Length: 327
Image 1: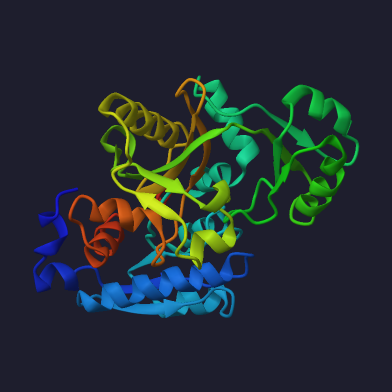
Image 2: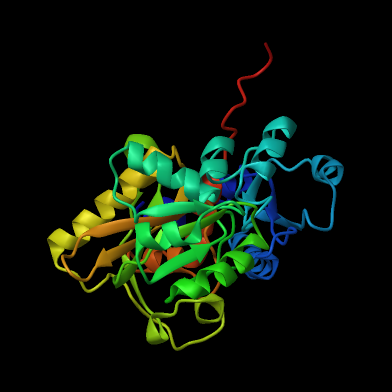
């Protein structure tokens, strides 16, 4: 994406976007972050002259969404019912074009276990893992993955419900915490290394990475508070990497994005193992944050693309993914 793609749109091109709904809020555990993202997107679109309107699916019904007669919507929802394919399916039924990936890509990308299965089938590197349910032998999980390990609910984001387990006796409590969000829990091999994220724009063969962001959190703890509310986390964009390593990470992120059939925009999180500089895929975000601390806008700025222009460019990609017209 070149800066001129969006910064020089004519009034008629802006008007052609029609009546736009910005969907944010919702009913997931990430509601507060979604409100921050959506408020920013709404202000940016209005500032560019777009006829944009707020819509909160957590407070209003699908019937009200249909009645608004939006020409397209920008999805700034995070977590369940926002980036898991649910709202995407509803929008397909209503015939409303929307930003981001389609139903299947969102559903798979939201579930970290299924994401891993697809990445592994595609020959892409991701940390070893185990599924945990009430019948799981926890000692066997420790034996397989080693310590420390990470335990997380596979369908949550923003580090919600995550525990780093340093001793075998801590695993049961970590499982209990994560099981408060999901029936099946993900235990993942802990990899010591540097943390990066790569924003990806486009679809299929045209998908391309924005400059990689390195995340350096206090004591290596990139938790909910350090993600969104503290200024102590440091970000480096472009990341301080040699050219070959940066290219490897960006190429891997694009391959991971394509493997899930993502489109429009997204973000892929990657760890670079300290011992040998090998990259490992962690997860994909089909509706990334757009807050003041968010990483996709940061990567875009590294290319000279301002926040409001980025919002318009994403909006312009809105389309129906499954709609084929009447039979």
